[in-house]
Every structure is written in C-alpha cells, then in structure tokens.
Amino acid sequence: MNIKVVRGNPTPEELAAALAVVRARAAAAAAAPSGAETPRDAWSDPARIAGRHLPQPGQASWSRTYWPG
Image 1 (spheres, rainbow, N blue to C red):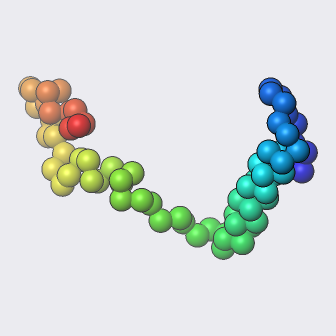
Image 2: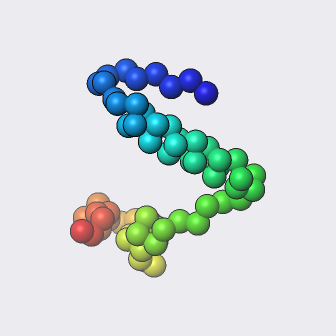
C-alpha cells in the first residue's frame, strides 16, 4: 500500500494516525463476508421520505413530485 501526501506537511504522528485509520478500514472490509449487504441507516432510506404513496401520472402530477423537507 502506497500513500502519497499531495498537499500540506503532516507531522509523523498525523501521518501515522491517518495510516492507522486506513489500515483499520481495510481490515474491516476484508473481514466482512463477501456478497453480504451492509444494512442501511434509517435516515438514508428513500422509503422514509417518499412514504407509501407515489404520485400518480396525470395533468398536475409535476406538482406532486417534490421531496418534502
């Protein structure tokens, strides 16, 4: 694994901390079973926003195609 600092001047401690994070993420990804889906967080689930009823096609359907805030 090669890491190249493109911008800035990190201290050896900062570089070691960043490398530890990258290695931990790589180890976690390697330990995960292949083909297994990671569970989605509830906040990122589109069904939470869209609800159960999608807009039906029609003359004024464009006005019902917004994402409520």
